[in-house]
Length: 219
Image 1 (cartoon, rainbow, N blue to C red):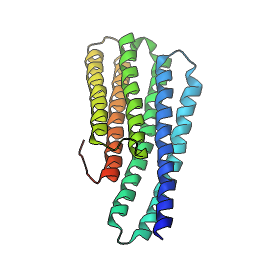
Image 2: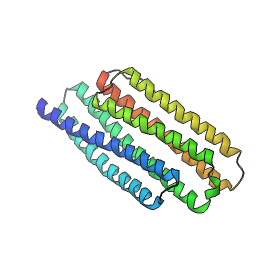
Image 3: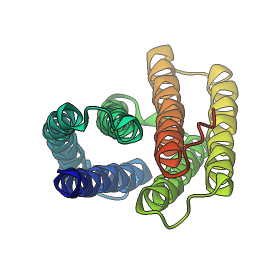
């Protein structure tokens, strides 16, 4: 029974890894979309597809994890690992949902008020998204067991601080910017959503590190 359970957990862990890589693809697509040098329609469509795929995968993964929990009985440590996997699966789906919202809002801005987006705004958004890409890469390393040290989580926290600082800088610039207030509020929402995305990635890394080390480090 134990061997069967471990094989099932390995399969769900592989599915979880694929889910996180979808988030990474969504981030890179959003970076390209924000760059404004490509047709946004196919980029936005692919982000939407990733969100739909992640929703289905999250439902499937959590269903499989619930079945595993039912077989574990007294295996407390394994049960906690399965619950953490479920938390990460839900978190990854929420990340892609956030990315879809960011991409859709950006498209609306480009269609209705492109002049509201300054060069500084693009650079700050690109910086935040690039930091999130690296955060996901390091989170996958933790999942794969390539780096299960507290240093890995400290590195992710540092990247998240970069995201938070860029969000604050963007807020200050946007609140002092003249122009269509609705467009400016939409931009503020975009930055706030990306800042929240960094928090979600950081939280996923925390749970995955807990599975590997048994030590719950609050971030």
